[in-house]
Image 1 (spheres, rainbow, N blue to C red):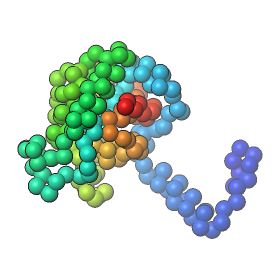
Image 2: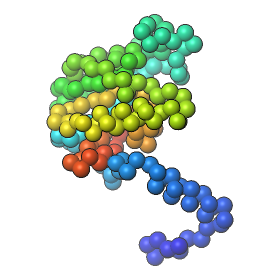
Image 3: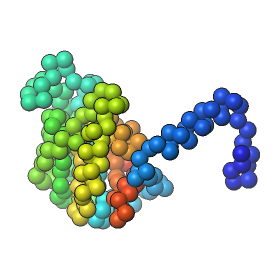
Image 4: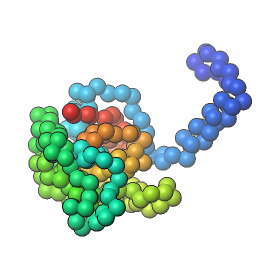
Length: 204
């Protein structure tokens, strides 16, 4: 097998692993593409253009998962932003404004930590979108919710800055990007409907 005038030899196990990766790529959503790496300055510039949107992981909320007594209607039972997380969300809002994004359409899950993150950004009204709710355990159970998000994105033109504030698992399932708290994944929806991951912005 030859690539760019270089010959690669695979041991049987390596070849099997290689073929498995090729098959995995073949079954991934064809609408998701990867763009060559852009600089941070270029990513900020892209956000000024129609057709672009952000997927954001909620700001810092220490711990993992949700408590055993978790109740979606009661924020006191959930894993919430720490004091540092609240300050982190405010800094992210400041950074967005410093780069010319003074307002945005904000869509959040029903979890309090995503709603609090959106509130502290101070960029506009907050809208709840169930398709952004934390994905349930088990890959098979993800599909209906992921398909609902895909349909919603397909219905949008993103004429103005738009942010989808959600959870790490949701962002990874959609983009393949593993995010830290508060990370901003920059995406472009092209006229043909393809969604391209342009890069990730991290604000300390």
